[in-house]
Image 1 (cartoon, rainbow, N blue to C red):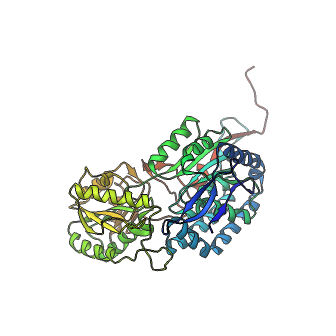
Image 2: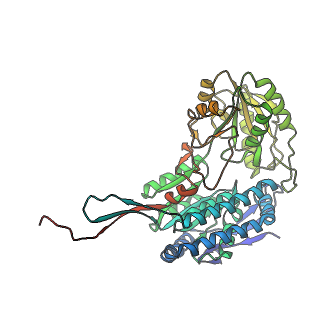
Image 3: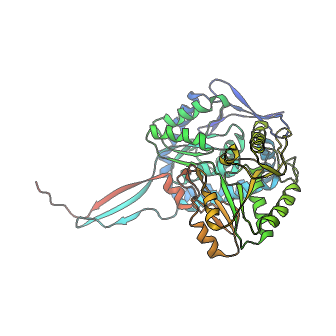
Amino acid sequence: MPIARELFIGGKDVPAASGRTETDVSPHTGEVYATVAAAGPEDVTRAVDAADAAFEQWAALAPFARRAIFLKAADLLDARAEEVAVLMAQEAGGTRPWAHFNVMLGANILREAAAAVTAPRGEVLSAQEEGVLGLAVREPLGVVAAFAPWNAPVILGVRAVAAPLAAGNTVVVKPSEDAPIACGLLVADVLREAGLPDGVLNVVTNAREDAARIAEALIADPRVRAVNFTGSTGVGRIIGEHAARHLKPAVLELGGKNAVIVLDDADVDHAVNAACFGVFMNAGQICMSGDRVLVHESLAEEFTAKFTAKVAALPAGDPAQPRTVVGPLVSEGAARRVAALVRDAVDKGAKVLVGGGEPDGALHPATVLTQVPEDADLYRAEAFGPLCVVETFPDDDTAVRLANDTENGLTCGIITENATHGLTVARRVRTGIVHINDQSVGDEPNAPFGGVKASGYGRFGGRWGIEAFSGTRWVTIATQHAHYPF
């Protein structure tokens, strides 16, 4: 029997005004896992009404009271690890290790938000006038529109709301249609149980065909004062355009075309293990996944032999099984898209080193290609699946050129046993994040997370997240009467 969930508005579970629902299908079984309410624009208005009504009281709540809610929510989320493992396997095809990592990091994002609530904010300014004290004060913006994606649903669902709430804003979140419970309603459940006041967080789920108009209605509401989006570059461009049209600041964390660079002084076995994790964790459905593994030509033969052997042996299939590494993609359509990228590349001259072939439902084989020509779609497009390209380079200049040969700029991994060498290369790679002697996938709740170029702008994490969702106000206090010229 499928689970049934409603909208979460004003602290209550309520049906869509139209009574419509949308199905939430398990990618592994193809069966309906849940039904959720399918909101219309009138429901968006209801959600913003609730968030706007709750804003003043939430922003004024004592910091230690707000901090206690986040800390309790973190503990509650930790306690739901097994529940989340089942939910993510059913809803998004997530493997058990990936689900447990989502819970761990999601809980720590809440703890970092708790720390941010009571951290010092603002500055004392040197005033021009005698006897005047100047202050630069950080203040919440109001209602924040948040968009949470499906691929790391608990991590990104929590991240969509934690910093805005910690800064004193209220939030309306639109979760992905592919994981509306894990990246939206679950987060609301945890925060509600932790004591979050009614209306501070609201969740609006929707039918797929309504996604664009729901997003536009949410961003256009004049009471919404900032936008927070994580997702594809294509959709992010649209969200950014809507926000700009309404003169609202936005944080956009978008797609990547990330490289893992194996320098000539790397430990090959470490490089193989690191690259395999960076490419195939969550079946490659991470914005930070290593689409391209660039290997110095002096190590290429050994690396490629060991890497392809390891990839070929990765356990694949049922995400609920503890040993599974490569589970299904989020949908059969996603698997067909990856297969089409492989076919196009091979038709244009690429060579398959391991994998390839047609998907089995939503399950696509772990695949490694080489010699992908520039006119192949895969050369530019984000794979977002269990697929990477291995290429060689003769020197650092070529490695840097290849790594930068993309419109994206999210993250990069540089494998080397010489940190000075790695840092020298890292300074030349144009990404928002770089990991030296590690692969491209990494996230910590206190670090500035985000990209450059077509990977978006703005930063999540630590004080940078608070700054992104608060405004700076100039306040002066005159300790004596001023003299005026008239």
